[in-house]
Amino acid sequence: MAQEKQADTCETFCFNEEKVERLKTEVKATEGLAEIFKALADDTRMKIIYALSRDELCVCDVASIIGSTVAAASHHLRYLKNVGLAKQRKQGKMVFYSIHDHCVKIIIETALAHYQHDDKQNKGF
Image (cartoon, rainbow, N blue to C red):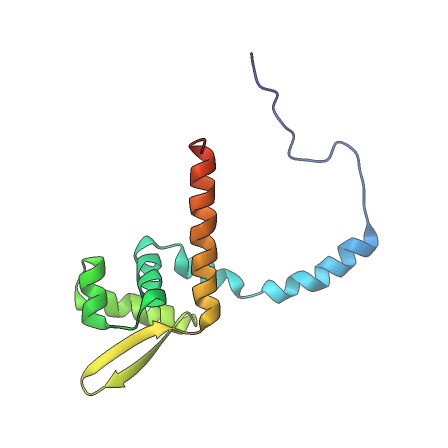
């Protein structure tokens, strides 16, 4: 039996001017937010930010965790810092990174919970 194709457009025209105007203003709050998700869209950076959400790490430890050079790890960490997801502190010749704040940890934990929930649903659990 062939599945019916669902339309991705309205079958009738409905325009709620009040709602549209309100939401036009509200969605402006998301400007710049895509940069955070762009940073997290890279598998390597996602692994790094997850590790940082678990513990503060020096650059060389991050490199070992992701299986890269220190230079590559440093590049990813700098990118995460520049978009506001990570912060750094120097201790002598060592540079340590951690997540910027608790909100970043919540983003990672929420995304992981969503992913695991969807994965279970797709497997029929």
